[in-house]
Each structure stands twice: as C-alpha cells, then as structure tokens.
Figure 1 (spheres, helix red, strand yellow):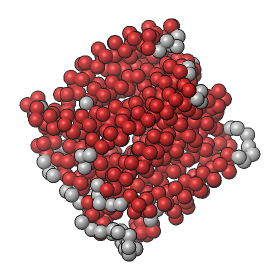
Figure 2 (cartoon, helix red, strand yellow):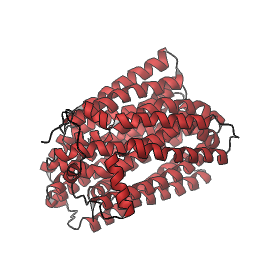
Figure 3 (cartoon, helix red, strand yellow):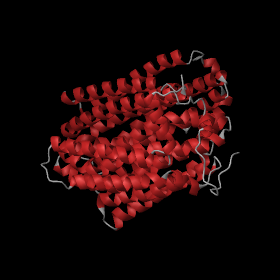
Figure 4 (cartoon, one colour):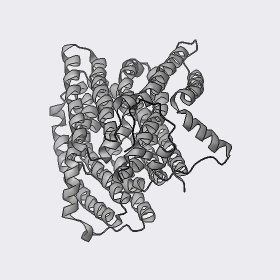
Length: 533
C-alpha cells in the first residue's frame, strides 16, 4: 500500500475515533457536571489532576518505548522489538501493584492538603483515589499494545480500541451517576474501560505483529537499563508537563476555590479537544519521522517536517481559533451562564499557548527521535518553573483570579514549547530556524488572523442564543476557512498533487519514504542557504 493511502487511512481512523471520543466525552461531561454539581465536579477535576502525578511511576518508559519500537523496526530488528515489549510489560505490571499504595496515602491526606474540600466528600475521595491509581497502572500496560500498533502504522486499529473504551466509559459513567454511585462509581468505570482496551490491544497486536512473543524469558535487564537510560530525561520532561497541566488546578484549589477548579477545567477541556484533534493528524507521521532519523535520512526530513507542520497547523487554526472565538457561546449553551462567564474569557488567553505548542509538534518528534530527551526535559522543567512562578504571582499577589492562571500557563508555553522546541528541533535536521519560520509560521499566522476576523465578525452578528443559530455560525466559519487553508497554508506543489490525485489523471507519485518527499521538492529560491546533506 502506498504511503499516501496509509496516511489517508490512518488520518481518517484517528479523526473518526477522536470525533466519536469528543462527542461522547462532551455528552458525558454534561451529565457529570450537572449530576455532581459545581463543587463536587471541581473535586473530581482536582482528583484527576492530583493523581495525574502518579503517572510519573513509568520513569519515562512510555515515550522511550515508542521511540525504541520505531528505532528497531526502522532497522529491521524484530527480535529486539519483542525484548522491549516484554521488558516494558513486566515493569508496568510491577508499577500497577505499587500505585494503589500511593493512592491510599493521597486519599487519606486529601482533606488536609486541600482544606477547602467539603467534609461530606472526603470519604468517597479516599476510596476513589486508590481506584484511579490502579487505572493509571493498567493504562501503562494497555499503552504498550497501543504503541506497538501505532509504530506499525495501524492507527485504524488503535483508534478502534479508543472508540470501544470511550463508549464503555461514557455509558458506564452515565449509568453509575444515575444510580448515585458518585466519584467511586466513575473510578470503577474507568478501570473497566481500560481493561477492555488493554485486552483488545493485546489481541490486535498479535494479529499485526505476527512475530510477537510475550514471554518472561524475553524480559531483559540490559533492555530495561537501555529504556531507563533514555526514559529518565523523559521522566523529568514528563514531570514538567504534569506540573504545567495539573498544577493550575492545585493552585486554584488552594488560592481561589473548588468550584473554580471545575470552571477552569472546562476551558482547558475544550482547547485540549482542539489540540488533540491536530495531534491525531500529526502523529500519523511520527513513525515515518523517527524511522527516517534511524536511517539518517535528514535530507528528506528538511522537506517533510515543514510540510507536515503546515498541514498540522491547517487543522489547528480551524479548531483552536474557532474555540477561542466561539467557545464561550458553546459553554453558555451547554453548561450554563455561570460556567461560560467564568471559563469563556480564558479561552482567548489559553488558546495562544495551544497554537504555539501545535506549531512545534513535529519538531518535538524530531528531538525525541534523535534522542535529545535531556533537552526536552530541560525545556519542560523550565516551562513548568516559570509557569508556577507566574501563576502564583498573578493569582496571589496581583489578584487576577482565573485570568492570572491562564496567563501564567500561556506565556511559558509560547517561549518554551513553541519557540525553543522549534528552533532546536529543526537544527537537528540541518535546517535554520529562519527558513523553517518562512516555510511554516509565515503562512499559518496570517491564516490565523484572517480566520479570527471571520469568526469575530460572526460572533457579533445579531441572532438569538440557540443551538440552531450557533450551528449556523460554526458552519459558515468552517466554510469560509476552506479557501483560507487551501490558498494560504497548503503549499502550491501539494495543491497540485492533491488535485491530480482527486482527478485521477495518473500523475500522483507513490511515496515509500521521507526521502521520496525530498525528491518531490519544488525548486528553492537562490540564496536561502539550503543544502543537501
């Protein structure tokens, strides 16, 4: 099968699964928000943020696992893939046994650490947190099979597992809340959905990777040392990421209030949907990038990485700018006036940081594939530190409330996740930052501004606040974005290739590697400093 067909299949599978996931999660969140109430929903959001730190028990092996699967597959070392598989499974199984102990401790201390938690919720929190901790461990085990499927470019099967899991989780969550089981019921449902996804992943992995062997004899201390050596910097990088994503809820719970934790999480949830939709499109190219790095095919990557970045931002601009401008109306219709007034203004501030992080996704993939995990760790820790300092200062000293939390998260994201990762990432493939910016940001930034003006104009039009009128605005904005993406973001040579493919004139080339993409490169202007290695 040609690379174009593989990418098309994987992209369709990822976005279909994500669309189902997003729709069901939004419906479920509506039930959870209204059945739990503002404060109890804030407690649940805080629980998820707090237990998110337990994911550090993987010691960075999850990103290391993905990298080494790709590395050995790129070199044709299938026996080594089995060693990585079995060693990681043994490690994560051990972590699953230990994590509930940490969960019991966190549950017992929850009321003391967060004194604003109403006393009537503490008993169920002390039971629910250990169950969530078990789910985190099981997710690590199940994630091994997801990674194996994705490194074989079977995102369609991985997406199928995601759909099954979210259907089970959504149906189960609504059922247990309707029966009055509260936070404990939600935690148990999460475990059940993870177990189902893990079993499905095991079966599908055996089908895709016919040489797969799950045996204790293949567990290797040498492989574990190799994974941990790569994973430790990833651990610190993950620590930084967790501080960035989870510390906001903790600070809000300490300095502002429990209900505000829930409101902030609603804004973050919407923008996460936008970024994750872009990421689902971007990740289908990650195996190709990392395996090309293993083959030292940097010449092709100098064409491929900017191209995929522009395609990624073509999606990111649509969804994130759309959420930034129209998200408040959605919140008002879906969650109510109080939630929209608290969370809506945060979307504009946070959205800027989300756009920046989307713009560096492929560069981050290059850094991980090239083994520059220490740099990523330093970047994430520096961003996390600045995030904490700014957030505490803006909320505590400046009394800016939730807007201060949003600003404290956005400014470091632009500086570190956006700019620093992009600059160093493109250097790893022998490309200058200025050239990369000319080929990417010079296109998606103007498109962002133009689409912002379109969406802002639509939000100012007269009309009643209803789902019908809101849907019309979204449809008009989406239709208006099509020519923006086609003529501004997509390169001319790629427009010609897409048209040739659609018209079926036989001119569509087959792509087997990233080097093929380099061979398709349009002539570069003289004097831009580009060269072939």
